Length: 484
RNA sequence: GGUCCCUUCGUCUAGUGGUUAGGACUCCGCCCUUUCACGGCGGCAACAGGGGUUCAAAUCCCCUAGGGAUCACCA
Image (cartoon, rainbow, N blue to C red; front, side, top):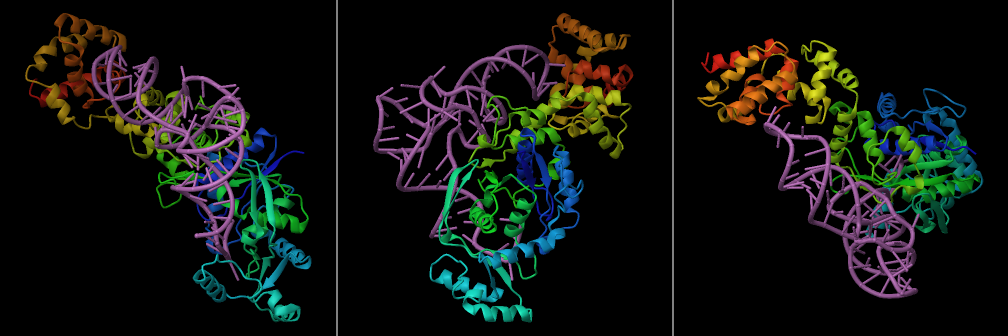
């Protein structure tokens, strides 16, 4: 039997990096087992619905290379794939549970429930719905219950949790067991007629023939409810795999409160999609332990759900930054130029040609973490010099500097083949004959040509800039210093 | 607090009874070098603690400690 997995986000905003990791592992599992990847939108909480988040979610996922076989956009044999469009299904199924005694009606108001919890808290016991004292079907009796329902009184349907040991085998965690007495009588159908996550999730997973439920560890405590539900319906259970959490620096669940957690924030910051996905994939799982850089296909080929770690993983931005720079050094310059040029255009920077941009990128890519940093890091490659580094200038430009390097400048001015190698040869020769040392010679020239203290090979930089521009800058500087 | 889950360098991890406990990020040193990087070489740094089982335990079992998740008519 082929595997079917689903990613089931709520449309409450943007794609969270934790959500991405869950989606990614589902995707890797589906692809590595030749299975089907389903997208299901869980929008049963109308109060948290955010417009456009479905589109947003799908776009972020797509950016990371995750696409679906079935879902709201592409359809499929198990649709609809949006829970609000499956509305009737849930109440029908809740009724089945009422009829077979696995669930019951309750009529408590939220005030009554609050009062109950207050009392339990004061008594030092765990807050839990008390089916024998609250206004449930059991305390009210069949007659009264029917009467209330007929009157149209607001009600919810709750799961009748038996006090028995509930066990299951998790693909990642192994045996897990909980006693039913510690499990609350979960509301399955809310008074607005919508199902809660628990009901909708189980009904849909069954109807969509999901074989493996791969989700975050935060769901672990509610697994007993889900198992009970499968049993109550008499359905076969899928296999469960609960992923370790993604943690912040304080070892707590990554959340919106601490910095960027939206995938699109990382996109906007300039991270490469493949670098970012690569990094996320290795948080909690690793195909070898030695290698770090993998393509999506390699991740798929090596994926094994049972080798996923149990412990949470801290999201380390420094390592992500490193990974991005690795991709930056390895990608074809043409691809990098395609990423950079729209930004240059948006900023109104004259970049001459794509070839020129590519040359600048290959000159500077080793010195930055993002390709977008190149226009500011190497601002002197685009248009005029933006100013001189004062500290560098006072250190490198002394009263006798001009006189000592003037012979070299004269020789360079006479050079006809303005290329890296001949320029370098002349400089090298000058350094040897003058006995000045490379630093004494090159730093002043770097200052005149780039204005900065750091940068790539100066001779290559000058070649790229061209002889005319290079000397224009040198002369401008000399005028400024009244040397000419 | 109840319940559940987790625990190898600061961080991500390899490791499934016998290893000098390996790799990567970070940090430090050296080399390369016109600067800054890149690259190369090297270094610091871990099996939470305690009991068992075993000839042998990071690996299996138990206890303790610590951390986390969860306890809604949210997912």
